[in-house]
Image (cartoon, rainbow, N blue to C red; front, side, top):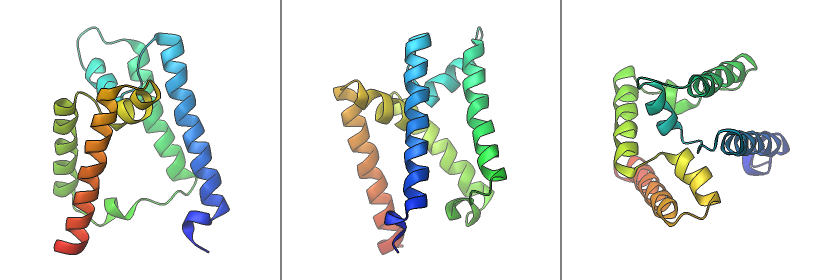
Length: 141
């Protein structure tokens, strides 16, 4: 059976999507803020950060830890690379979010839901770059 049609994978994906949607909806309804992780992180590291920013970031870390404790596998991309590559990748992602005025969560989840043309353009660029990187890694290198 293909992993795409595996009912367990589909159920987990649906549950994850529902949780992301609920968190993004809850944040905008309660605080009037977009659930863009890069913006939340930037706000949390500034003077006068609000408690909800740290709580949101802590929730991301706790959720990841709970998933690991529940036996979720670590993605091979994380285990097959050394720390220098992972650090460089993280810095490049951070640089890209500053250039793009937001991250995939802010543009892809929240921006598209609000029918933002800027977010649509950003997501199209994200996806094109991701496709290009996969093509180069698999077929060129």
